[in-house]
Length: 142
View (cartoon, rainbow, N blue to C red):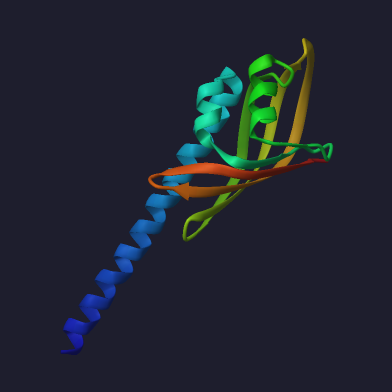
């Protein structure tokens, strides 16, 4: 009886751990899709990956909504030539995920070449099968 109970509990634990890892992988894929969409200025993908309630905070303190975020990337006002993400951590709690990473990017905002080095916090929310970006806040990485 004890062996059976232990086996059932172990199986349940494996299922929970596996489900969490699956969600973490799905969030990581969403982050990668966001990175690529920002570099490619893919407004359709940016729209798909972001929540209608998006709050997108810049390191300057300025906050964009979803429409402003997508328009700035699509128009080239905020142009990412390349984005490199490092030291990423993902924490999933139910239908919410918190992602932190370092972002180093080459930019060409309004035709002006530059670089940014940021620490970023992303909040993702699961909608059906998809993870969408609900909030983002960046600070300058010294």
